[in-house]
Image (cartoon, rainbow, N blue to C red; front, side, top):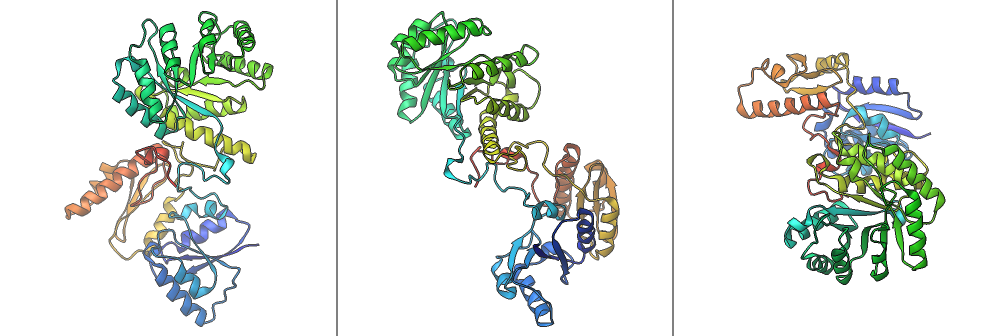
Length: 461
């Protein structure tokens, strides 16, 4: 059984001991209090000196023992390792996260999972559609394509008009191809499809019996859809025709919006996958994410999870409406999360928190009684701020306040220093937001917003 020595200060000691008893972890845990009121103010050099003195006075440590120091302690771990000869780990920044940390469920420091092996990358391809491309300049289209690629897109889909050709489509495709993009086109215009083929397009969406003959002249695979959006008989018939012509195809049984047949659409995908287990499938997510007044993050995760079970090979998505901003990035994160869950044979939980943007995987677990005990150990006038499911708490050695409004609490403080007032106002505002949303609050730390913490949408390692 693993044995841990938990280093803490005098203020957090009682809360730490209660947490250990309440959690009932199946491991040997010993708490060591060093003479420092605030654990976060310790440095690793300070801990090394104090433990070195304790060892000289008879403190017994085995080399198998693992020392956990507070997460906010500054400095490298080497001084503590050299002073004790033990393994040393830096714990979580919040005491309440310690049980999860010891179980190996600590917060990841990245928005995408660290691959366990090179083969961990999801094989699902994402087509990101540039809608209204005929009304954009080539430079605007290229800029949008780069944004989509940074967000995780594999193929840039150029959306054409329903009733008129795209006059400079060939130039658009050639420009994108020259910059290393894979390009698809979604158009019903024969002229557009012919022009795109001449420019070297990689994929053509979406053919049915009305324009199937165009497949004979194309040098790339095509995406087949049912004639009326629902008729699988026509989809299968057109598939047989393409097979006779030796033309590669991807099937898209069409996914309707919620309340307009989404469940029936999913059942069509299930039937197609059962009837043609080896044929590649494409699923368009925009009909779902763009046409509902709900955050796209969770919707994309759910849709990608179901598509993963159906062994869908391609996702078509876009970011037209403001509510769907970030949908390409969300789809990319979701495909990786689901793929990793499948490979490891586990639920898509505690693998990566990039898609938890509004809510957090762990909340705030301090109780008022614990905070009162903590206040009893404080001797200074510095304010500590905490949050639970119901209240915001702010206290020092002389005052203890609780409430639900930053303004309400701030008005009860007599702060003369403008800089201090600005600091406390900012922290209380952050605490109020965290309390309302159920987010985790740690004083002086920014709130976490999943993948949105990285404004550029780049993967953080």
